[in-house]
Length: 83
Figure 1 (cartoon, rainbow, N blue to C red):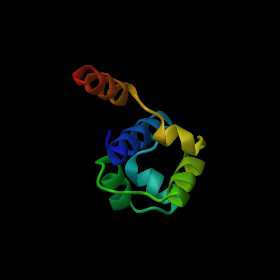
Figure 2 (cartoon, one colour):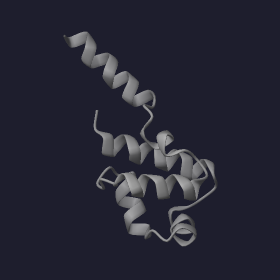
Figure 3 (cartoon, rainbow, N blue to C red):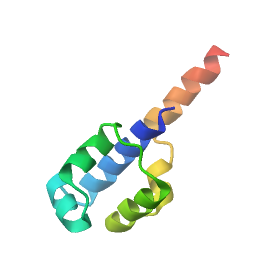
């Protein structure tokens, strides 16, 4: 499981659910829109501190950003069937 992609998917899902565009989240949080875009595409490797700051700005737990989603669970199931 690629954790960068998982965090990006989770972040994007929560961001949209909270009604933020990338631009409006950037304005509210102090992160740049370019950083948010890279994060959502799985191209950024955020630190623990950054995860906490992103989660706080969204009003969620930092653990929500690393929790397995349906795609990660399906990936894990496919991998366990191969063994």
